[in-house]
Image (cartoon, rainbow, N blue to C red; front, side, top):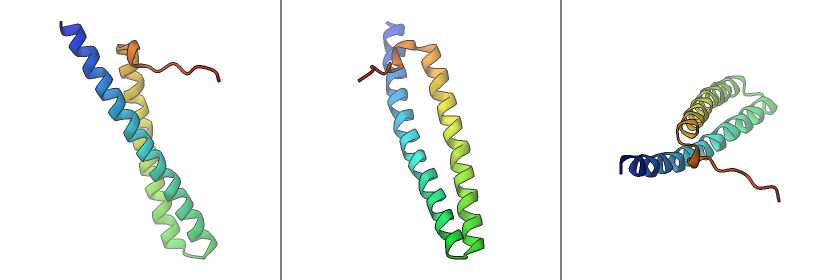
Length: 85
């Protein structure tokens, strides 16, 4: 019974991690876009702030991927295998 509940919980965590990865990826892209816009318009301090934000979000993104990889190694059934189109 424990294995079944562990698998179910791993599945829930996997779904949550994937959703968070998607959200953080969007924040990285937005921060990088805003940084580029600030550079193009000559706002150096704003550019620096957005670059820092992108770096922080990217570090979080790497950590989320690390957690997802660890979860998938421990519970291989949670990994989604991509099928070629």
